[in-house]
Length: 114
Length: 110
Image (cartoon, rainbow over all chains, first blue to last red; front, side, top):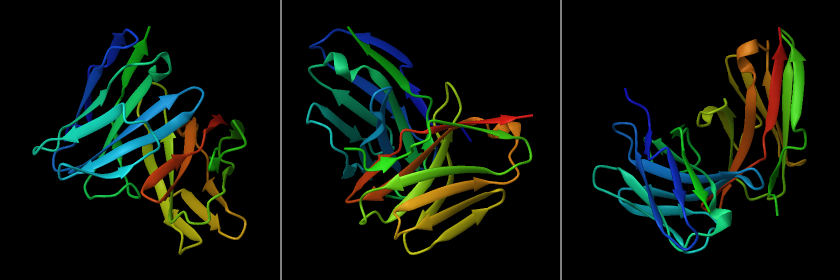
């Protein structure tokens, strides 16, 4: 069974631009969560989507948004990029809804904002 | 404000011995705790979890202990193997949010 895939793997954007990252969960998984990993803040939870609805949300500003499609694929959007948004963005999927259960992570998208 | 803390950034253990990774948390409302391990250039991999209503959960070589009164959990790996060398993150859920510690790098020496 194929794992979680994320595209693109690497991205360079300029401050003020917006970016969209994509995540395809493991087949049959209906929950997709997004995380940001930086050297300073570590791994931080952004939000979780299940059945096309946001179910849980971390402490990030509204510039960070997401959506989930009927096939469970998810996209994350960051608007008005700031230098501090440079990070590894990880996506994870799980069978059921909720962030307390086993999640399977993708390799991440490395975003650099210049 | 770090709600989940891993105060030891690194730990070295001889192969075959026990590895004990520690994690402290501040929020008594956390209801579920998880451990993940991460190899370089890969996403984290789920290891083991424990509900706040339990004090121990075991899965093969991995055992997690939860001490709610001390707001402390630990992961025991017995026996440690060189393939266990990775960064280990503890995490806690509560109020629809998930909080991670900063990680402990475990090195198992052959």
